[in-house]
Amino acid sequence: MSETENRPRTTETEAGGDPAAGPGPDELDLEAAAELAAEAEEDAAAQAAAQAEDAAAALARLAEENAALKDRALRAMAEAENTRRRAQKDKEDTAKYAVSSFARDVLTVADNLARAVESLPDDKADDPVFVNMRDGIAAVEQELQKLFERHGIVRIDPTGEKFDPNYHQAMFEIPTADAVPGTVVQVMQAGYVLHGRLLRPAMVGVAKGEPPKKVDEEV
Image (cartoon, rainbow, N blue to C red; front, side, top):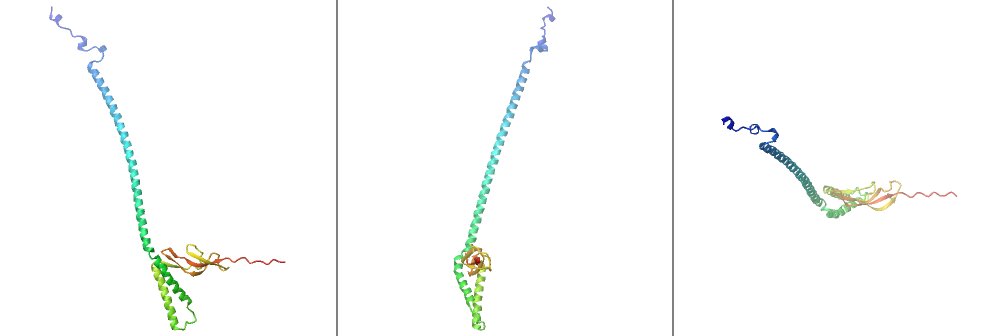
């Protein structure tokens, strides 16, 4: 037997492979790896999307909580500022109106001085003693009014003004055609305010419309 006959033949499958036989083991491994990679990529994308949604939800919750905290902080600051202002106003009011009781008592002195000046007769203008006394009382009364004004005490003389129950106390009504009904025509006692707040109402007489005259019926 010759060497040619005894040499083993290389089959077509061993040399180049038979296409009809299907993919080999190496090709199967590549396809499986590609599928696994695709699945892993999909899983990673889904996980990333879920994480992004969770992060967005957490961020929205944080933003909402931050807005609520900011609102509460602003409310607390506003309340603290209002409390501070109220305390400051109470302090200022206490300082302004602390002398109310004392001022009411001193008003009696002012009233008496004013009455003394008004009651002095005019027929003694030639008497120097009388004139000096009159001028002295008037000067004291004027100085007392200036002292009142320096401390926020202002006199109310509403003659000719419309009657205001917030500042005036009606003592009587006067029928008259010379003034509009409801107008103050006489002041019995002056009123006073302390820094705009009523200290004592003015005691006044108020104009009242005259009743219509009766017309005699012709017989």
